[in-house]
Length: 133
Image 1 (spheres, helix red, strand yellow):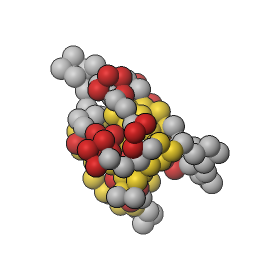
Image 2 (cartoon, rainbow, N blue to C red):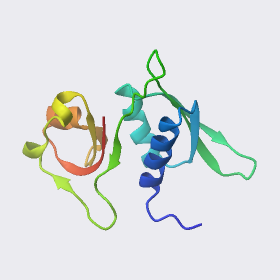
Image 3 (cartoon, rainbow, N blue to C red):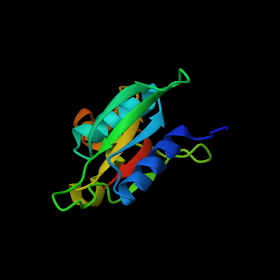
Image 4 (tube, rainbow, N blue to C red):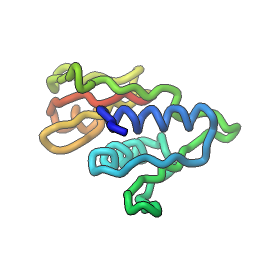
């Protein structure tokens, strides 16, 4: 199966697993996905993630989803913004708060993949990968 946008596939798997209240979800492994998941963990949207190997020697990442005390979703909305068909870039001055500071935007910059808070602190812009709230 040919996958044209693996990041979008990962976000869709996380969104679908969160809606049906799954404990964890597995996605194919890559460095970019690991960097995005690291930010989601730091911001408190997921419990944890770890690399696993399946029987067919393909590396995967198991993402442990996080829920509220009454099993409410922590991730209400996770959306891919910059796609392969249309790239979205933001200058450092254009980076604002997402939903009044409640949400998080993830950017690909010259310093790696970082959150919108780090972008404002470092005063750098980049490609807007996704928005999580």
